[in-house]
Image (cartoon, rainbow, N blue to C red; front, side, top):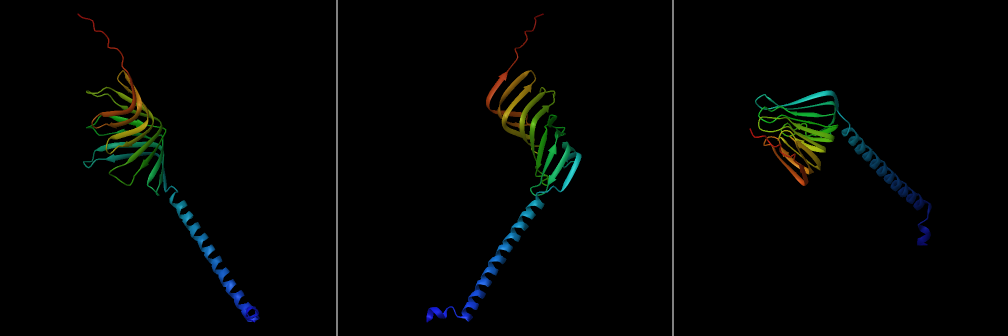
Length: 206
C-alpha cells in the first residue's frame, strides 16, 4: 500500500514538477557559466588588442634639466595596453647624454616595456643586434654583435645571456653572456671568453 501510494496521479504530477524545476535550474546554471566564460574571453580579447599604432616614430627621453637623455626610433610601433608594452620594427636606440660615451643600438625588432613608467623603460632587442660605442679621447671604437639584448636606457646598462662578439679597436673577443654599463664603461663577459689580440708592430729605432 505504501509503495503504490507513491505513484498516485497527484504524487506523479508533483515528482514531474520537481524534476522540471531541477532541470530548469541546471540549464540556467549552464547558460550562466557560458555567458561568464564568454564575457571573460571577450574581456581578455579586448585587453590584448593594440590601442594605437605609430609609423616612423621618434621617442626622446628628457632629463629633469631639459636636456635629451636618449632617443628610440623605428619604422613602426604597436602599443598593447594590457601589459603596457610596444612591439617595434627596426628599432634604433641612441644615447644622447653628453656626459657619457655616444652609443647606438639597432636590431631587426624590439619590445619596449613599462612605457608608462617614466623612470625606467625596458627595451628588448631581437635579431641582428648591433651596438656601436663611438670612439672618444679615452676609448677606442667598440662594436658588439649578438642576437638578443636587454637594455635599461635609464640606467645605461644592458645584458644578454646569448653569445656575443666584440670588436674593440683591433681586438676581437667572443663569449657567452654579457653585463655592461655605458656610464662607467665597464663590461663583463660571463663565460667561454676567447680573444684575438693582434701583435704589436715593432717600431723602428731612429
